[in-house]
Image (tube, rainbow, N blue to C red):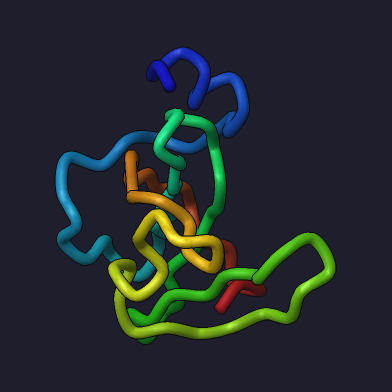
Length: 94
């Protein structure tokens, strides 16, 4: 997926050069793609540094310590993290 496509889908969110922790005033977002490079999953980082994401369309929210826990090409996995991005964190967001 190209940078232009990511920017169109995720307005107001900027790319990050690495997985280093962003300042608390910013939210990091990890975008997963499957083996066909199609968007498959999104996770966001909490203030404490863990990650939150929703499993499936009507799935429940889960919290995980690393992005790698959801990576892989099996049916219950989401591919690979293709892009890390960030956006401004608002006071109401964890």
